Figure 1 (cartoon, helix red, strand yellow):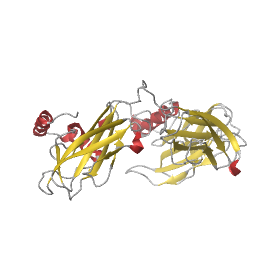
Figure 2 (cartoon, rainbow, N blue to C red; figure 1 turned 180 degrees about the vertical axis):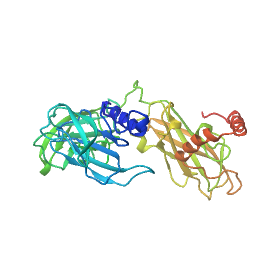
Figure 3 (cartoon, rainbow, N blue to C red; figure 1 turned 45 degrees about the vertical axis):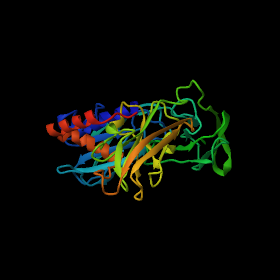
Figure 4 (cartoon, helix red, strand yellow; figure 1 turned 90 degrees about the vertical axis):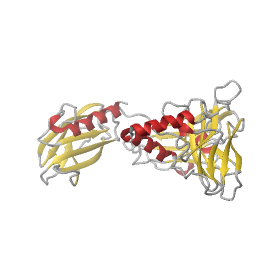
Length: 396
């Protein structure tokens, strides 16, 4: 959290320029030179070997720009890039590694352009830490079907190797642990991570997760306890609602979805909504809506848009209705919680081309459109929405 807060403070200073903190300063108490701005990312509590992202903007002369700090052990030259906006000077960037022998504590940092100091700040160095293998789950208790995250952090003097994996009888296969230099852990070049989905039918018990290095050598291991939900557990049956259907002019958005009475033309598209107060582990990847009216089962994906904030977890997915259907009512079924919960809604299909229903956009497009509507909505549109909500039947 401290790292994130530091980055935000620096970004604000860079945007404000001379009218804000001070041109060339990043909120850390340094001094600037005219329009020069210094932005640091990862300069708070970095261990030896971690990277500090350094960006200097506003140096107008074509001169060598470098940073000097005891934290890096030697001067580090920055790479220039062209101005990003009108009136801006050239930018300079580098990701510098904290020296292996850097002492823990606060170290001064200066930026030199053509041999002249144009900005100052400080780099906080944390002590080195022994290698650590972590096996974690997002919710505490591990359930069959849950996705498990693992990482190996061996940023420590003398550690080598770039090929690591995790194996366990709880996994379908060995899981490679890799480093992503463009991911959220870019600052630690020796953080290797990976994930595995526990099989839905995995038996209760304690399993060994073994970390292996180059040549298959065992490096470390961790216990992994798995227990399926039981009667009385909050997530045993959850509190599922649906499936409800929406799409087209009569129910264009998830809030207007209904389990019965939704009409669509043969060959059209319908969207399925499923809600669950305590969804089963891994349902983000397994939940399906089936119907004899659908061309194929509809994959239901977790709604992580702002439209889903503050609600019970909900899942959305589009389904194409078969073009050769006879008019009539057809069941739409969702099975969840390892088969313990089964619910069915109904869809009314009209003859091809006889319904006003049209293909609806994806949930992501609906969420974006809803956000845009907040800005440009008119009184007439608000009235029409209220009328639609008053006449629509709520989901059962």
